[in-house]
Length: 84
Figure 1 (cartoon, one colour):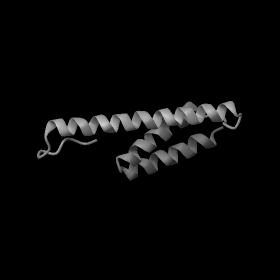
Figure 2 (cartoon, rainbow, N blue to C red):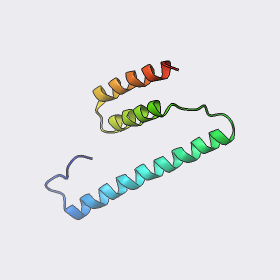
Figure 3 (cartoon, rainbow, N blue to C red):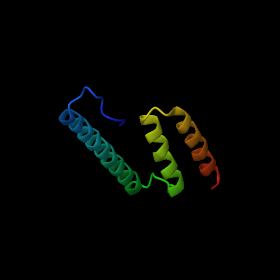
Figure 4 (cartoon, one colour):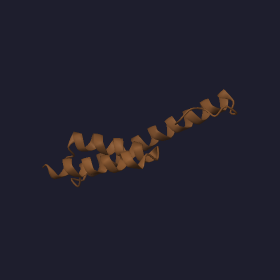
């Protein structure tokens, strides 16, 4: 998140930031469970760690609404996926 608005009390801002961090942790936990289930079922394919890192950075850029960076990262993700 960007900086706290000047009109907002610090305690409120801290609660918002804590909620965002908890939501990110919850999403990561759900993704981990999904991947584990797919691997156990033999449905998942091995993902190149470079592709996974670029995909994660792309998702963060989208969350921040930095669509130019997201587009560059999308192109990089496609390039790396095509190298195999």
